Amino acid sequence: MKLTRVKGFKGEVTVPGDKSISHRSIMLGSLAKGDTEVYGFLQGADCLSSIDCFSKMGVEIENKGDMVIIHGRGLHGLKASSDTLDVGNSGTTTRLMSGILAAQQFTSRVNGDASIQKRPMKRIMTPLSMMGADITSELSNDCAPLIINGKQLKGIHYDSPVASAQVKSAVLFAGLYAEGETSVTEPAVSRNHTELMFEEFGVDIKCQGKTATVKPAKELYAKKVVVPGDISSAAYFMVAGAITPNSQITIKNVGINPTRDGIVRVFEMMGADIQVEKTSGDIGEPTADITVSTSNLKGCVIGGDIIPTLIDEIPAIAILACFAEGETVIKDAQELKVKESNRIDVMVNNLKAMGADIEATDDGMIIRGGKQLHGAVIDSKLDHRIAMSFAVAAMNADGDTEIIGSECVDISYPKFYDDINKLKM
Ligand code: SPQ
Image (cartoon, rainbow, N blue to C red; front, side, top):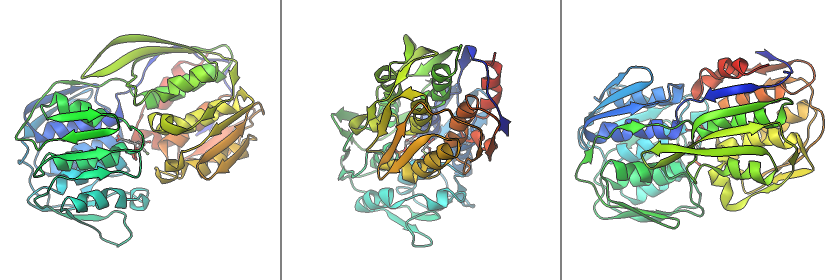
């Protein structure tokens, strides 16, 4: 795809439903008793992989577009799949589903695309094995394909070395089936959608500080789920509004759960013209309409406990920092190396190709803003967040930019290019 400078962006956009909540709605809906209706479900390839995997385990799931009905089979109602469970590109499906599979009375094989086959799975294999799970990496490289022989699990306390909602959630899902209580303590609190949704579906879960504790469940109960707009998708419009001259963009109904809203705090630190107007929200998830206008930005330091609350927005924030006065330091973000691509290297190399003053560090990057970007050939490495970040950069650069693999936005935002083009002046 070729992109070039725009004069400005004006208008309103409603981004698709939150990816993390959409995945969890399929998993909890499948394990619940009764029918779960999900409104605003994200029809991205990753969430369709979750639907596919649970359908293969005997769950009837009606996908009617924006609305999905899951005919739950109860906590012990899943059936062995005769095929490999194909997670596609989705780390969330792989890790959360593994926690469930570890406790079933059957064996499963879980595999995905080339990117998934490189992402680390030891981080879930270790705590699940401590619970008594039999989970192995077929190629003995701690990556998928995974073979999971369901076992009776026992509750543990796990001190997670990483702030990861996927690790925490894998253990909590396994904890539903374990003998005794299961708890996870993280070094910093990661997104808490699993905890909030467990409560909604009738699970006995307690959260205190950085620890979440779940009691074994007897039954989960179906629940209507209204999915808020994904702040990770809103991020591209927030950045576009702030860095593009003559712009004002309102993003409607965005989830602003405090474990996900770090990008809003960064916009405020950088002096962006941003307004957050709270709306009603549902399932314990606060929402807001966010308006961002062309801004005079200044660099800042982003690190510590805020990182898990904006980890997926860092590619977009790196673009923002190129348009700020002074230096932006992003640190404590080594987790970026194990996402769909190595997001530190891929951002730094591609931004360098566009003329940015940027360097990679061990745990992040340093960006000296203010250098005019120019068009370049950008390799997205088939990472949706890289493709969308560079689409926004390209619309603020001199000359043409070509994004290789631009179609990978299908993972989390299939209509992204249509939506951003509609706002062009
Ligand atoms: O699902 P996947 O592939 O891991 O997707 C990403 C993304 O950018 O969309 C990460 F690459 O989001 C993760 C996120 O980074 C989704 C997620 C979740 O829903 O629990 C948690 C985060 O990952 P982690 O490893 O920090 O727990």
